[in-house]
Picture 1: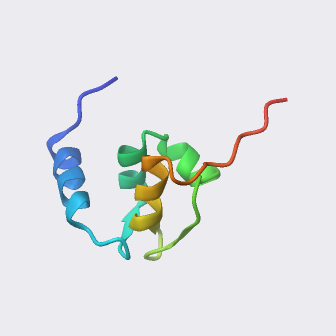
Picture 2 (picture 1 turned 180 degrees about the horizontal axis):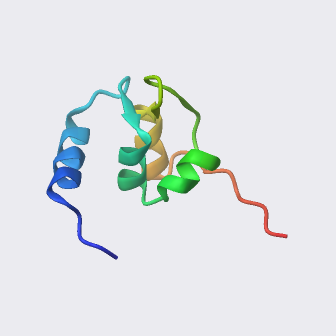
Length: 79
């Protein structure tokens, strides 16, 4: 696993101060949850929504519940 950059560390520190009603970009969602950014773009484990013209994000409160195990991410089909 690669080391986090200074920008990523700072983003994670700011994440802790966000209220549950805030929106987090998918890049931060990937860092916090350990789920790849590609998975967040293609089949997100919680609902995502547009936060600007070309950015999507997820609710911080739902993301925290997901990382604590209070929400179950949908299982991926294996065929």
